Amino acid sequence: MFPNSNNFLLTIALNCIQGYRFLEPFSIYLKKYFQSNPQLGARDRRNIRHLCYSWWRLGHAGKSLPINERMLVAFFLSYFENDKLSQRLLQEESLLNLINQSIQKKWNYVTNLYEGQFDQNDLFPLKENLEPSIAATDFILDGFTRRKLWIRVNKDDLQSVKDYFHSKEIQFVSSHHNELALQLADDYDVVKAMPYQKGWLEIQDYSSQEVGRLYSIRDGMSCLDACAASGGKSLQLLDRYKNIDLTVTDIRESILANLKLRFERNNIKNYLSIIVDWNNLEKNPALFKEQQFDVIIADVPCSGSGTWARTPEQKLSFNMEQLNKFSELQYHMVINLIPFLKKGGSLYYSTCSVYQKENTEVINKLISTSSLELIQSKMIIGINENADSMFVAELKRI
Image 1 (cartoon, one colour):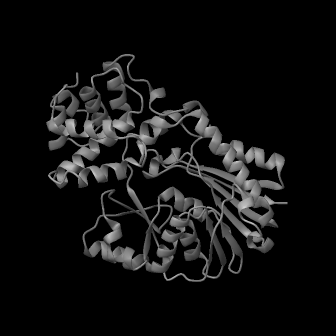
Image 2: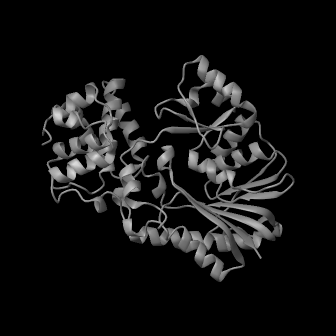
Image 3: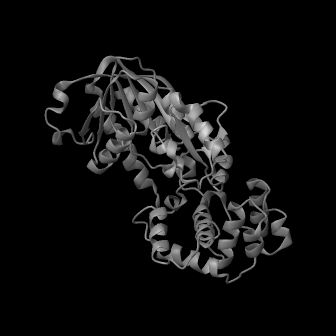
């Protein structure tokens, strides 16, 4: 049985959780909490962060347990090192002997110990709506694993970045499938590193990079990144194709300001940036003066369910009504984009969702109601790469 202790780390972590109101990402809330409690040292902050995120990873499972005991179960499932922290919190030798075993073994132990109180269906909302290509059990239990930090290195700067990491003794792992994708420890502050400041690399998850590698574009083409956000996919595109006619749009002025800063750091000046609401074109009269593009990238707003291993707090507040709203929004946005795509041009639809209602169901509806035909689609499952999961489809206007 798990100890029902009153360790001060548990107390602080539970205070953070109980004070959170889902009005902002938990990472931002926690940062503000630490700023207002400067007496907490770096090690305490790191351990409290571990405990909080472990709690969120449980979703709605095990709610009948005392909160301290439930927190320790969550920690046991999410932590994989027999070290001072796990010894301090778990205490029991039987638990410590299992701490570095597979998540499946640890989950089996917990479900047997607390018969009927931990159900896999409570770990992830709307499990029945997952894409059929996803092995549900493996995917859901993988949510207990903390994600690593992935970076994308510009192709001309790869050796310089590796040399820098070697000189600073920064550990990294190269992807077997993409030499420009490097994995770092999730707590490495890459933004302060010289290669980032020089524009040699960008923070971009492995699966996101795989989406970008599927784009088939030639120099000289016109390209619209319709939901550009802070420009990650556009930067990847420009690293592959230097001479494209790029237009970026987003509904948020502030996010396009961030894009501008990233482009300046990469010394990119030749592009057009416009604030556009693709869900309501009536607000955008004479948009682009009827310009059409060879390629449109539509990385549409979504549930983000493929990234919930990084933001597990979002699992607790998501429901079917929200999923339906995202699906309707995604379809409507693409319909509005079609007139801006040349006949024979390609539209790349992508989400960081694992729900078929946002992915294959949207695509099926598009090809049955519009001038788009499906060329290929792919569910990129990030389990084996310690990465997010994403969906991408290539569509052609006929």
